[in-house]
Length: 317
Image (cartoon, rainbow, N blue to C red; front, side):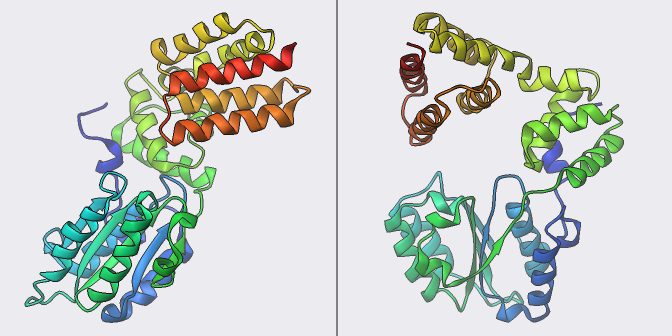
């Protein structure tokens, strides 16, 4: 039923036409491909798991042919954010383009480009200009507002939309059929509800759930750690009642014993707050958002979540 190959890679589309959803973007790119040499630099933006990187790789295959890997440089900018990455790796690759072949240009994919520093982006702007005859850049970003305007103006921008529930479930059914995995509608809907349109996450969750014997709602909840989400309600109640030690101990148990991520814990706290109709909902929302930002900025999660619970206790008095 399951194997060692990740389904998200096994069933990654190889052609532009196979991409799930994003029909308008596919149509626009197919029009550009009619005159490959005139293709501009590209900037793909949108939430995670909607096909940005997949489409970039499909373009490389279609434009560069069988030897596309040799003429493609793929970098994760969030791992290599500094100015040295731009100057050394990107500039070197673009300079020695090796266009004594029948390819129109080399392609540089910068994934998670919105995580690059401002200095790196500024340096990249000049490199994009200097290398435009021999290279094309495909920038990929979740948050386009973090890409400096001079780079945006040098690219054709494509904004990817969240994949609708109907299309995600249909795609999951196709994979399940090929893998001979039993599924039911409630299980597939639970996957969609948890992954919120992130198709990559949905496929990974379905593969993990399949090891439990089938894609049922209960198995999905077990696989995703959702069986403990109601315990987050208890953490909120304890914090608001001033029982900080009890709330903190329960929070640590959920994260370290049951594997709930810090971001999911905050998401469930936020949902519990609205579900229980807290009287100080505006102030509590601002507090949750503050600690979410701190954790995303790299602060210690356990310290930040403990501080969150301590701050929430003020509203119970």
